[in-house]
Length: 336
Image (cartoon, rainbow, N blue to C red; front, side, top):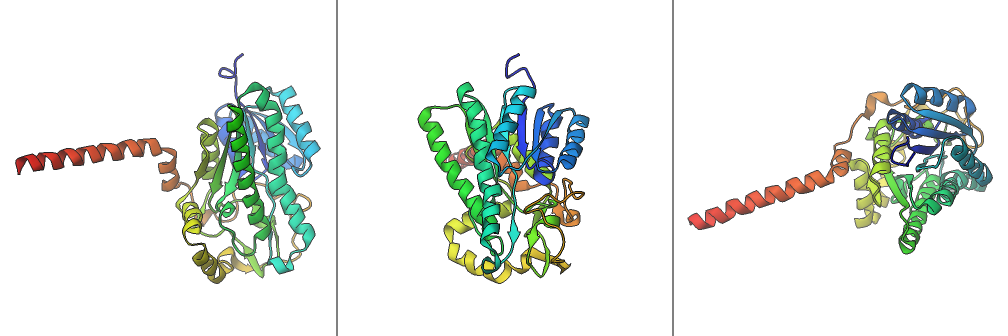
């Protein structure tokens, strides 16, 4: 069976919750065969049951993305069990909400190993298999914070910046080699994921995504679309676009703005419990789901993402309107 005829084989890291689990649902609706990677076997088995119920096939692969050998072994298992990998989605992440001056070196190291090196290891495993076949798509789940660092999340922001630089280098090399393997990065807005229940935090109040907030289904739609129509980069949501391009135009203003509002915008709803479990070093069982605690404030759609996804239609409409306007102006001149 040719690649065009068989179900696509997809690998998703961070598949037990949030964006990764929502993306698994989206691919399952297309009938994809999906390798699900995360640390919690129980949560992955729940996600796998959901994938099957939605029409896909699932393979549970419990491992830590910071372990390069484990990721390589997982990729081998996927190809032996499901077939050649068509799409690899790097999504797994870890973070710490903490001022830099209060964050110990080992926490910076751990966030970097998961959120940056986990993407590198996943990409290497995908390239090892895709390059000889000269096909495949690698989707890197990024963030507006890949461009605009914010206070209290330095480790995470730095890791996302690193992914951006890594992808720039990789694209150049793929172009140099004339490869048909594609890499695309999706810069996400604030999302209603469960990470805020279990992220390690030294903040006085409970952590939250910086509003406005979008549901993980918006991110999943972007990942699915990018896997079919890969381009260099996607920016999902007007807030992400403002952060990316605002930082290009006036980064100093951004520094001062975030110094004034960036602390309060990341906190809500009462004091944090400094002793609650967190998932920096080990998984937190029993709290995995697609959505987090912000349903009442989260948006199910993004007009900006709709326009970005359909930019060809909007460009054609703009050209048509300009042509109509030009024709009307020409007739007016003739009448004069």
